[in-house]
Length: 117
Image 1 (cartoon, rainbow, N blue to C red):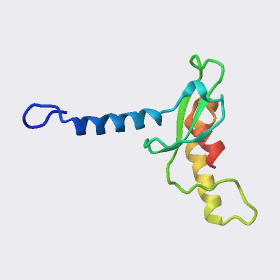
Image 2: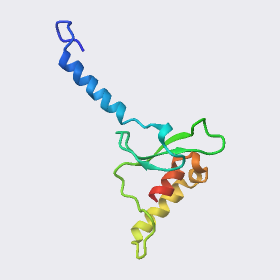
Image 3: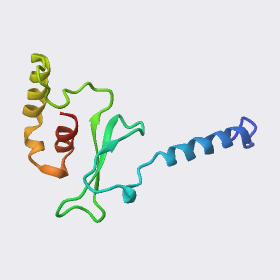
Image 4: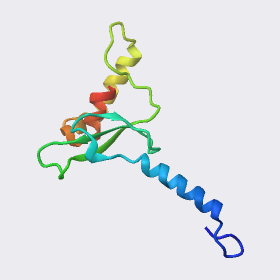
């Protein structure tokens, strides 16, 4: 971080390092996660959840999968007396992503279907 005179601006550098440290602290520690246990995500990626997927043929230590649109209002679990709109919304998601859901634990659609729909 050099100013217009070619010298380092110590305040700007300190601010940069503080922001970089905060960003690093928010990163996901895959080794500390349990296999196949989805959790909420808050990393600015636009995704709402993350899971360490462990399945036969997965990379060593599992595969990290981010899924779900942050801020999206999903239908959630079917409820007694659910509106027709929500029923159609759920059916539309499942129809649109059906092929990917069938792939199982290795796809984001599978986890999204399981957690959010």
